[in-house]
Every structure is written in C-alpha cells, then in structure tokens.
Image (tube, rainbow, N blue to C red; front, side, top):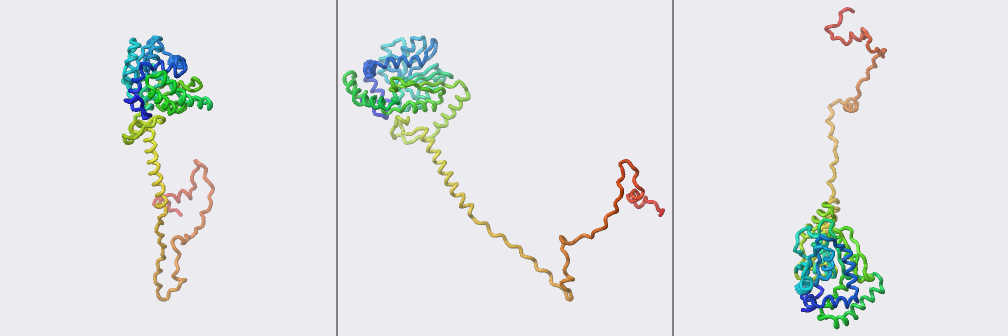
Length: 370
C-alpha cells in the first residue's frame, strides 16, 4: 500500500516512507522551492547543539538534520520508524548512530538527552501527544525540545494561496519529481489536517514543558516550536503524577477511528476524552442527588400534640372558689422582712462592734449577762 490514510497506522506510514526514501531529500527541496534548507538552518540554531551534548533526532529520515547537529561536536542519535529511511541514512552518514524505532515508545531510559528535536515528523505519528510525553521523559531536567512542523499561515490571503498550492501545484510537481506520487498526496492531506500553531503549543504545555514558544517561518507555512523540561523536581513529579492518573482512565473500543487533529489513538479514545466523560458522569450523578434533595426536604413533620390541662380535683362540700384557690409555687410570694438597720461600715483592721461580735458567737460561748 503506497498511500497511507489519515488514521496513520504505523505500518502503512512506514511502508510509504520506505518507497520514497532514496529521493526524499531531492523532492523536498523541489516542493519547498529551496526553503527546506533555510528551515533546517533555523532548526539547528534553535537546538543550539554544543560539543559533548547528547541529542536525539526523532523522525530523522535520511539523517540530513542529524548530520548538521553533529558538526558542532554533539553526539547525535537519529531515530526513524521507516526501515528504508534508516538504511538510506546509514548509507549516507555512516558516522551517525541510526536506530529504527517508534516515537510513541522511545527505546531509551529517562533523562538521557540534552535536546530532542523532530522536523516534519510529528504530524505523521499516530498519537502525537503520546510522542510528546516520550520526548519529555527522555530529556534531562532543563533539556530542550525543538519541533519544526508545517502549520497554518495566519494571514488569510497567504493561507488561501498555500491551500491552492497544496491542492493544485504540489500534485503536478510530485508527478515529475517523486518516485511515488500517491505517498506525497498523503503528505499534502496530512498538512491540511494538521492543527495550527496555538493548538500544538497547548499540546506541548500539556506534556509538561515550560517556556513554550513558537516562531513562524515562511509566513507561517512552517512553525518552529520550542520548550524546556522543568528543572524543578516538584514540577516534574506533578507532571508524572498527572500522566499516571490520565493513563489509568479506560479507553474506548479498539476498532474506533483515529482523529489526527485531536491526537486520538488507534482505538479512537484519548485520555482527555475519557477524563471528560468521567467528569460528565460524576456531574450527572451529583445533579441527580441534588434534584432528589428538595423532595426529601418537603416531607412534613407530624403535628405537635397540644398539651391539655389536667382536670382540677373535685372540690369538697362547703368549699368555695375563694377558699380553694391557692397560689402556685411560681406565683407564691415570700414575706418581705424589714431590712436590717444600716450600720456604719467598719474600717479594715478596726475592732468589730460588740453587738455584732456577740451575734456571731455560738450560743454556748455567749455571755449570760443581760
């Protein structure tokens, strides 16, 4: 199968690139009207390779960009999932290390590379968000991410002209310059289907990268995206925890289609969609409980029983209401005694008056003198 569909099944896309590997760089130079070399120079400057650094070039193709990174003295690993591309790259650049592998499951340990870059390859990955997670994982703390990818020109007239080029001019050029016209018709479709600069920036931030920014090249036909893996261990731990939680959400059936613009996987489910579904389900349950609450609140309490007065005991013969009416304890008044005569205050330390002292003495100790 020479042309892959936009479901981007790895075996189909890999086979498509196998068929165009030998003439890939030449065709790209023709289709970009020479701009591919300028885009490569801008990417190398953004990566800023230094002697002794370890750099991973994902979707490296035949190794043209990887060779440019290696000229600075950096140790470069070129990875591609197309066996034809890897074989052609090894033939052209035997000094480089080429590995056949998938961007969604990078065959490296954590925190291995000083920089990770991918040029015109992320849109061909089946699950680009998962690939970004993998790039984050293999980067060292403080490591650099650089992505060069086709994008959407922000100016309307440029965007319309670019779309016309992809639809009418590019197929005519491909028929002349390429060995597999069907493969390049897929590439044109993937460019049109790929999201804009802002969406890709959100994906990069969602993977945990900081200092995310992009710069348009050639009026926005191509965009250069950059990000950094945080050096703060607490931030990295938070990203890892969030990632583990998102991956624990169950996915949809395996035969669902993939939407490349939203990063859906082969089974048609994304972590984001599953989380949203779980959130909606919880919200529905909460609303149901809330709706049931007023009904419970409207249950009327049983009416309080009125207290009835106890019947008064029967009156005896000859008793009248006047003679039998007695005040209740609450209304019965105590007899008011005449207040004690006011005595002059006794100064502190003075001798207590005799009368008072005698009154306070016990009866057995009082004087019998009258």
